Length: 357
Image 1 (spheres, helix red, strand yellow):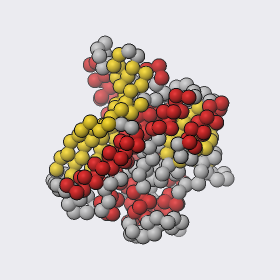
Image 2 (spheres, rainbow, N blue to C red):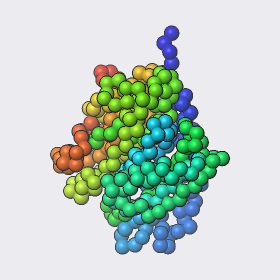
Image 3 (cartoon, rainbow, N blue to C red):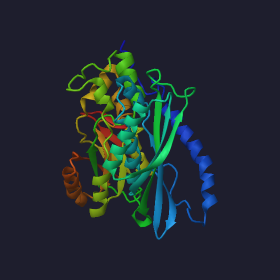
Image 4 (cartoon, rainbow, N blue to C red):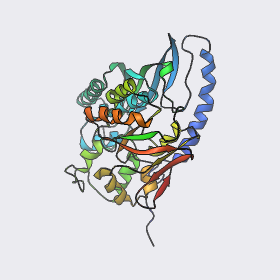
């Protein structure tokens, strides 16, 4: 009898319950939107997109978002290497802000630590600064809290969590939501740098617990170790995406993070579909995770970015300029599919293997 493959739920993350929680949160917090109605700071966006918007006058809106690094911090602890997770924290914020067409402006961070450790804190902040430089944003300040009763980690005394709140600006008539997507638009995938900052609970379960890899073992098919591949910083797409928005018409933008390709439903609004049939080969880390946990294609493509970290949906006539801008920025990109009148997100993985997200 074939052994059942690992799922995200087996690793402690139930996406169905998470979705139910999001709906509950939405119903509760949307009641507060009216508290600013008719006043400066009125909410002009919607709950559930990549970021929400408040009116700041003169046709402009402030985009607000918050995100963190997740359990990738455990890999940093196991490797005793903390100078890259700050890049991830910046990336997870700014890559979401640009999804609505906003230019990222600044972040404030929140660092919760198990034990005061100036050297570790310095490394983490250096990573934040490097990420800020890459995204051309300011770090306005933040909060550091020492909470030994709450924060625990993979290495005693090295536990920490890192999150940030970010702001950006967009003219309200330039907001990108996905509502302008029409059938036969092209879907362009921008290559990821690796696993980015999502799915680490499943990755750790498969690699470290099930397959018994050590963090310093060589990664099959790669010149990296398991740990260095997992810790590869999330790619920041700010510069190329802002240039794309400046030069061509764009109908939709999506950061492929939690929920992976199911995230594309967020910009389809249940009225249009996507058929993706030209995906690039995923990096070695994904194949190793899949084999280590005997994980199904469906579970892989709804958990991990599988080599595509960001998606641009645009009219076909915009595609050459988009690809050129990405190439100039050093970002590999390719057309991976097209939009369709038939609703739903369909991924074609090899022959006769269709995955519905």
